[in-house]
Image (cartoon, rainbow, N blue to C red; front, side, top):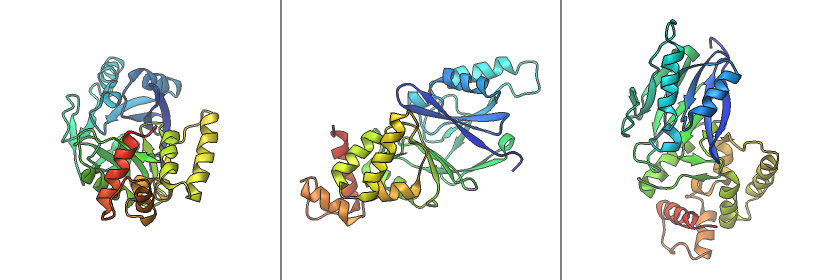
Length: 272
């Protein structure tokens, strides 16, 4: 690596996390739904924005792009820095600002950061949703597909698509860090406990993450290993999850993993 890389957590709106991947001088923004906190973070850490990575088309993930591009164009005018920043995004989504369209098995190289990112198609939340995976660092930027303790709502895709997407992410190394886009962890874990209250690892996680939130500490990133132990949506093939769904009257006696996942998602949609 030319320089060691870090990730800045940039809170936005009520519960979004925007991310800045940087080397101490240059940075790429991930899902900048709001430009102001990104610009503030860049200024506070003396970073130059070199490009933007988008996972899907929802406004809270792309809303700041135009302002960031305009700011970079003005700031870099008269310098050797690029005036038109690259914007990477899903090939199956319609996002006007995207200059580099990406899909499953593509790989990009961010030269400024000496960083390779593999692209994973993860439809479900939206049809074109993608994730970015840095295999050397074991970093996953997965937008609204996989959350700490949960998964995204199915606004466009099907349960089968989301289950397949989660299966892809579950196959990543266990110590992969999950940089998802929202602080939904406590509400997700409340649901998980309703589904799987006897899970000791889950109960401990709720205590640990509740303590973090009481101190206003992010619960993200999580790890793949933790999600596989405590996230019911990652455990649709686990007999214990199916058993609890049966007991709650949410599932028929004849079922498969897809039916278990579908029942979980429908229950979570209406869980309070």
